[in-house]
Image 1 (cartoon, rainbow, N blue to C red):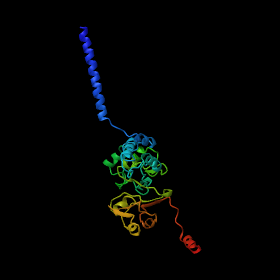
Image 2: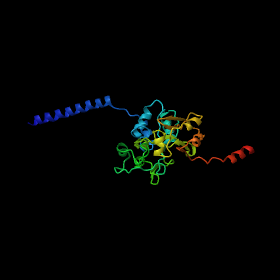
Image 3: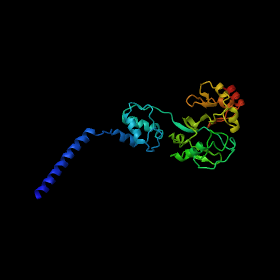
Image 4: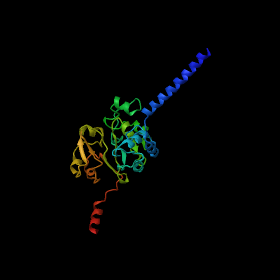
Length: 287
């Protein structure tokens, strides 16, 4: 009886040893090598995990940087150029400069500009409202004012203005992660190139209705009159679907389009006031 027990113990021990050896060789055969530079890159990333880089998190972005042949098209908007330069140094690659971006709201539908014609009584959620209801005004393209964009911002770069019912973007805090862009069901928030002194020039309208209905719904709606298109000398303006759009990469801030817009739908922000004609004439004479 004792010999049977002993043989059983010996057999199980040998079987365990054999299994261990087999598992060892299998592990060696199929082991996954992870580049140690991934940890180095992840350590210098801001750990926001916001998805602004286009990846699920900072770890995934670090892996993509290590595996990529070049850094072209890869950028951490939160970390900025400093982080990307440090990553390039670790990888021995050339950093690819990326223009800083900032979120911009393409709507100026304040109560004074876009009168309320109905009252919504439902869930305070932009996506639900957008899918079930055109909105409290006659504009079915503008902001529905429930603040989904503000709720997803991880950087306190947005807040809802109770007076206008519109979100306000704080340029100094905005890192252009794009979360607000994804959260807006009406696609009226976009990332635009950030200019010096936070200057902006853009059409603050997303209404694709024709001129008459658009203007009746909102007095600062774009009516696609082509006047801005005709005065732009740099090909920065296009008109599609009854709506003008200014390309931030081509715009030179000459501001000619602003002066000819009959509905004042083009906003110019953070610019110095224009000089009076008399001041310009005097400066020319004294030059």
